[in-house]
Length: 579
Image (cartoon, rainbow, N blue to C red; front, top):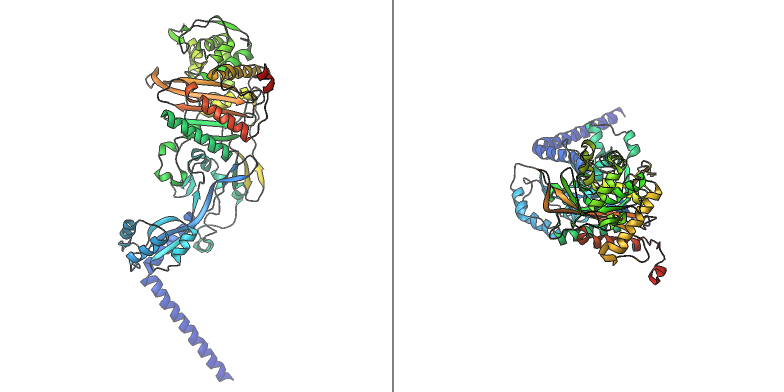
């Protein structure tokens, strides 16, 4: 019995010794024979887990029926790489891979010649099925590593709003522009890399895998952007820019009562799926990062300020002389013509009269006019949820005592605003006299599954409701009787609108003779507005006035929105037609 036990013990000890010898030999091959290769590959696998394999929240557009459409998400696939030392038949490997997924032969063969580098990346962002097909070839020296990447299904549409992700100065993937940057804390995941390489992180002791408080606000973004309306706006902006050879064309469509933005864009733009080949000048968003002198779309606000302050009424008249001299500066109507001593305030809007706007500003007075400009939010950020927002420039009327500064500001020259500043202020005319905070994200769907509706500051009252009702009636008359000679009037719907043509300031002072910024805004139904639209185009070629460039695009969008949202008529078209 004892002898048999000792025999079993010797056999067991022998097996343990053989196993130990096997491990030693295996370890020798791993560390010595293939040490460099495995070290580099292991290092790459870890990097793949912490960088290429990452998690991030989705950004959604919202259709009118509440359906969520992905605007920014993650795709999963592979990175293809080779170890030239182990790649025995480079030509054969290339041919086999190329039959599944076309790759650049010259680049592949060049990488295959780098015998001193055990890891040469050939191609990234390989779709799942293609990667698995390549892996099934089992070619020595060919490696496939899991990878995730950000995908933007809409391409260039809303690119400057969405932004993109990229590496920061710490070599960490983060939001670089747009909503990706603004909501980095919501979209980023504190557990990046763990799903792909949990044990690598655990045993490498690079950090705890215990969840922290950050996850409480991680989630997906639900925006108010309607992809159908967004596509329509993008196409209209592109058509304007292409037709007139403009330097830039932009637009915003917003609910004036809530501040929800349902579409916004500028052209030209870039493709966030391929931002490395895009123009960096197009990465920023001009709607918040640039300011412009918008011209005559300021006049409805000037008239509203005059009526609201009691300086004028909607039936006031003045003497329009065509040109006036203020502080030795000449201010003229666009055509230099006088309208006479009994010109009505309505004509300031209908005929876009600079002399009339100057009259109203003078009646209001410096202090009163400046107060309305500030209450409208000019010179301050709108706090729309986009990064890098700047504020407008109203220094002319804040620091100068000269009448001419106020007179020119009354028709939108000499002060400059961002497009979002402008639509926020104009929105007061479409929202019972109150300005709202424009915003793009309406809710966050948390990781817990709970959807949290976002709240924004309450509206700020600027004008009395009866003031804007009066101005809206005036702007409806502009559309019904003056815009394209009244040919664009919609029989069943009241539309309030105004064009703007502004000279462009020259760096050394004064204005260019032949460079203009055209703008157009409007809202409808005029007395219970659903949407307000702002369009602009910078430096259009061969045309001088916004009525030529933006009238039909505005009406095109208006008809589209009326049909798309089934907005009911607000006036008795049959009675009006009969009369």
